Amino acid sequence: MEKYIQPFVDVCQNVFRDFIGSELITERPYFVDKNDPHDWDVSAVIGLTGEARGAVVISMKETLALKLTGKLTGSTHTSLDDEVVDAIGEIINIIAGNAKRGLEESFRLVISLPTIIRGKGHTIMWPNEQARIICIPFKIFDNETFCLSVAIDASSGA
Amino acid sequence: MSTKTVLVVDDSRIMRNIVKNTFTSMNIPCEFVEAGNGKEALLQLEKQTVHLVLLDWNMPELSGLEFLKKIRAMDKYKALPVIMVTSEAARYNVIEALKNGATDYIIKPVNEKNFREKLSKITI
Image (cartoon, rainbow over all chains, first blue to last red; front, top):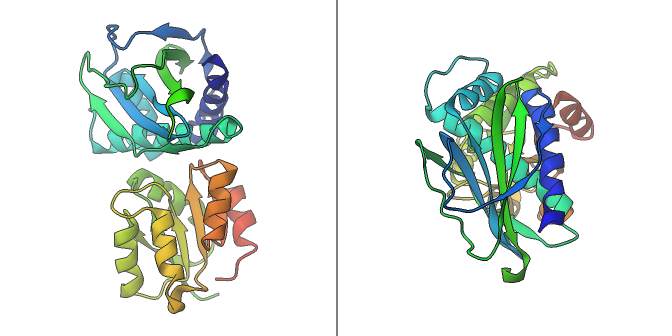
């Protein structure tokens, strides 16, 4: 499982540098349980199918989602509106699509369209009971954080 | 240079704007028409003469790849330049798109350098 994580770390750093124009600090990844409580306001989910199954999820507080959207649109956002949903969905889409390149020697993946979940304490329905979920925490803009969660089960692909 | 019509196909409005802004920064005289998926893109092609398509892959209704297959099956669009602009970065995706008639392939996030390189090879 851990060997599948590094492509996501590398891609996330590159995407935020090239797309958002900000450097990330990667913190130590850790396993989470799907029922663990969390403090995030919004998550964007992309399902992974093909020769493996799983999902990749980016979760963050509303303040960060608004800042990231502002970076992409050049305008100010004050709530989780459609443009914020669009921005966060596109960020996870680019991360997942680019990570496929780093994983292609292990398996071929098909990525879904992004789904956005909003609300305090929202629940993510992880598509696979077998795969363990690894949360990779990142720091951005000095004091903001977000989490990229990845679960891949290579034994359950098509 | 006469003004060209560029069809930007992406389900993300933010991404369509970024693609348009990047393209505009190259000072190529063009006007843009937009579509949020492959179905809308087919309608746009029927409405006007399009000289270049910038095409995302993953979209609802009709994906970029399915759109590409459909237009390449039509004689009038066989030579239309279509550049995939997508996050699908795996080599097998690039090969699949090129096999199905993509003129070139740009991996998101886009930048001016990528566009310049790709467009320098294409006559629109």
